[in-house]
Length: 494
Length: 88
Image (cartoon, rainbow over all chains, first blue to last red; front, side, top):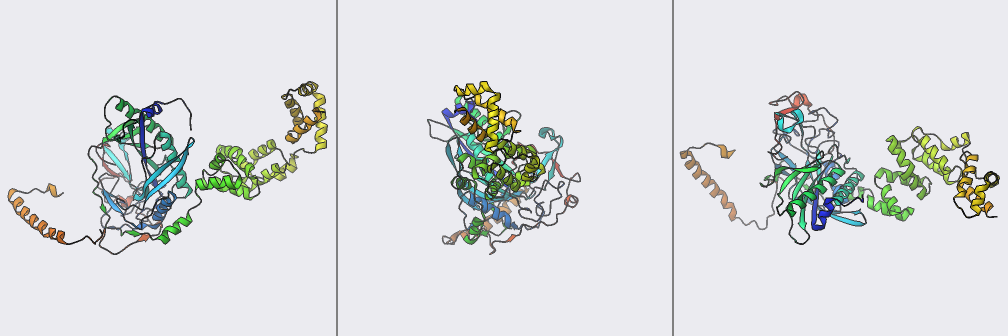
């Protein structure tokens, strides 16, 4: 992506190979929680309002699996080309922390909903392929904040269980990534995919899409694997990239000095631009996993799996390939236009309404994208709308208005809307493309700019600009400029 | 929790013998040939018990906190947690 000067991390990668695997936690877009009927919209409610005996972990309650969460997880697994075993069950992962009221998290241990998937994506010119170890389902914890917000000096912590029990999908990637850039692109693609299939809202800042990384370095000469460090607390794509670059640099310096890497968890501290040790992993955690006795296991038959498969939309890579084949777009344009499902749908709707494929692509990626960004308003919801843009581009395509007029009208009508054709008629914005009329203006331009005309005849191509401008101004900017160009050249070559 | 039971010397001997007998009794299970039996996670026969994704009324903070040992009316309040002591 960014071709900047060589960073210390990139220099380190000449001596060491980085081995990076990512774990993503993504909240599912269900209406209710994973095992109870409380609303899953935990940020919309005042603290602890969205709670019930199940998600508060009170004694004697019985969790029941949310069918939609299972379906979303299977949908994700299929989009990542995973296998879906027929049998799956939930397990208890035991640990103690105040945001986990039961003293265990319902998760999946040895029989996840899916395994053995893959995702492919381009980085620079190469295609990176990353295995997906598993996609499984668990529940989110509550949230805590600390008095004074400075952890070390706090004497009390405040717990809110609105998030407790929100369905949380864990996507474990294989350690197939080799650079910080790979890691960032993996996350960009994975997030795009989850949003495309409608299972997650992709909000890193709010934590509905979270990422942890495992990273080790190994010498280019020796084959043995390095000691793995877990990096947490990265809540933007940029943070992931910076944290991994910084960690590659740190580990390389440790190894260069002859010391060994400690197996530990480190947190990314944005303000300091480096990772800091959080806790030692010398004692392997014993989560004492065992099957969740309150939840009967699941048997997902092939009819169910095939029904979910059939509900999958066309995924971004396939859709981009089709855009190249069907609409003759180049690979870059196709990839930009399929980056969100809404953008891709908008493009296809515009083409269906009769706008030429390349014209639609250019306008959507250029002026329309700029306006959408400026007004924080997508074309679909704008005053002009998809149909309005198709009429506007129709006027341009049939040469009734020229490019600059089309741009002005787009800017004017984008938010407030209106019928482009009526405005063109009302204001006389129609393009002047009558040859006889333009020939007269061309003659007048030559007469008024004899030096430029002589220069052009003498071989000075740029001199044509002055003559073009003359005609453009004479028509109030409405002249069909490609036609003016041709007429001027014809006149001057006589 | 078991490890925190305070036992005197006499109790230790008495319960030790009893526990030994229980373990011996249970170890008879190891004589059963289970090579053809697949592992089970549950004793019930139920599978695929699921609910539709429908919102139901919640307790609300007031009721949720009504039996809490400590609260501020909105949150459960616990002693401060030092991040490096515990796992998250």
